Length: 339
Image 1 (cartoon, rainbow, N blue to C red):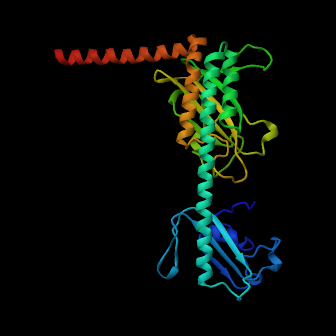
Image 2 (cartoon, rainbow, N blue to C red; image 1 turned 180 degrees about the horizontal axis):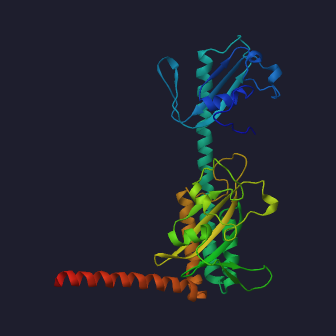
Image 3 (cartoon, rainbow, N blue to C red; image 1 turned 45 degrees about the horizontal axis):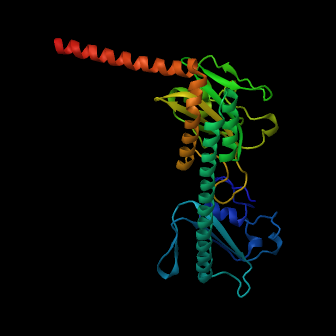
């Protein structure tokens, strides 16, 4: 594995592959021992002379005279050839051959990734159907909601490490918790709409943040969303796993136009690259969103049934507000008509 460097990294001693990745251009070196970009810690550093490195990007084509035309898209892979035997340096023909090999590799990788993702999605849909059957036939008590939800999430997204549910009341959220031994579920009020849970309960828009336990200045997610994180309400990464990378997902359970509950879960982010789906929930994957919506829809009637005073009260309050607004609008319309 080779960690990806920052764009502003010093090229000295960085290595030819990393430099080609950053600069998105071919690198040809006649004598690597005299080039400052050579990585002295590489196992092959002392035996490397001539070098040709080719970054392969999406949209690359061959122009007139066999010249490689590149664009500024993402680098898919980097190929490196070293120590040409027949001559002292690589030539334009070598550039073309390495490019063709790279494009073939890129197509194979894309095909493998697509096949892997398609198979995993097919397995997930089968698991979703089995989860639906279990929910409909086995959900008899509130504790069953927690157990079935946890099992379903671990099956659909294997990298899920923890799952919790919060009920949404008229003026606060309530964490559903169990000690794991008793069959009772306790409700812990949040005293308002706090944290990401409260935000999602009110906005009804799902939110994902990376590494809630770390302070990362270059977070890929919206810093405003991460600022809403409240460890007193939201899921917290266990102390044993603080060095790992996680994504925290907060998802609403919708009924009659409003949120009756919020599902929050942690997914461990894989450190290494792999083909296709890595087993984690991806907020930007349409199929993942559809799976989550369907799964939560299975539990929604049971939440309303077991907790009508909390979930039902919020729904009733919402409809009363809608009716009040409608009556006020009709009254104004009558007054305008009469005047």
